[in-house]
Length: 280
Figure (cartoon, rainbow, N blue to C red):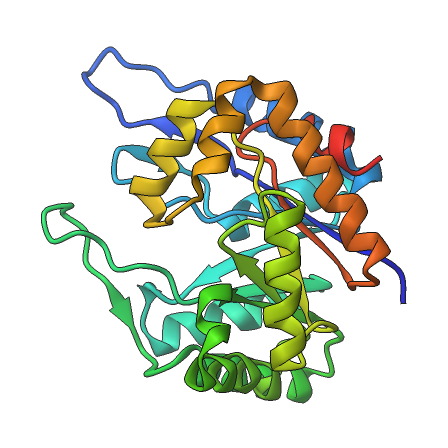
């Protein structure tokens, strides 16, 4: 098996309107999104269109953005279906739409709850992610689709037997690979994450994550937003500049290849060109 490169892109995003005179240039945003995807497609085996949770931003859904890429440029993309936003009939309809359109890859994620004061409601029709994957796998079988399913995994959970059982349950339900968080920030973190994967006997089914941080402020913001506890050495490296951060990312990608892991999961974080810098 080769080295699978899953590269995540943001869908077209628009700031929420602030007044009647506000104008959204939808076509310009669509054209930019398609052009960026075409530019980096040679560095990716799978282009994963992210789901963006932010009440202050209007967005094209992951599914719509994947369809846009396919229709306008022939670029194959993978939508993300987030259970946070769907009841059971809505979820199954979304999965069936993806299968009927022939998407070769699809990610199914649980999604964090919306904050109580956000004005948005969380709607889930399943008690677990594994249950939803199992339902999707049944649709896949009935439609004779050849779609590969991805699902997330929290690496910290693999230190417990319950976390390992949850991860393996998602695979037994029908996911082919698990995409990991938090990110693997350097070779020291790679050693720790490899130990977790090998202890759980999951090294052939998990894609570790490379997440290109942009500087000290960005590291602090990501800790608050995602709830991560990132080591002090990352904060120190961020203070040395973005070039030091990118060099550590390149070392991780090289280390993943040398360790014989099945691939990498790269977030481009709104800067698609980073895929060319790290996955050449």
